[in-house]
Image 1 (cartoon, rainbow, N blue to C red):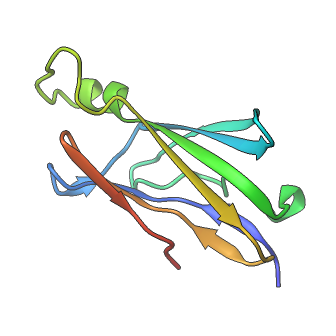
Image 2 (image 1 turned 90 degrees about the vertical axis):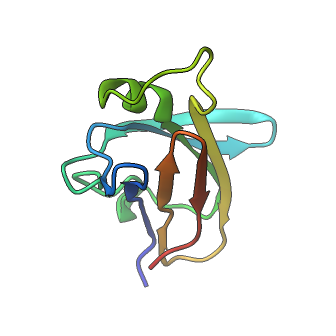
Amino acid sequence: MAGYLTTHVLDTARGCPAEGLTIDLYRIEGDTRVFLTTLTTNADGRTDRQILPESDFATGTYELIFHAGAYLDAVGMPPETPRFLDVIPIRFGMSERSHYHVPLLLSPFGYSTYRGS
């Protein structure tokens, strides 16, 4: 089976996909974060390509960084100073060569994630 990583971001406060949200991907190697890529969500709240495609996939520990504050500013969500949620890191492990889907459900004052399908 092919291994790859995808994500999907839904804006639960506005009830729609989170278009234009920037996401960074890092591989964790010991105490070091190794930058891999930056992508931005499309109108469906997904990235136009896999965040980590099969050709680059390796098992290990990774971190997705969701730039929620910049997204919330861009969509006109009234800001507080400082924003309660600005940058959301999600660190997770991929232990087998399969499809990993790590979605984010986002609002200005909370978020959740899970291993999707």
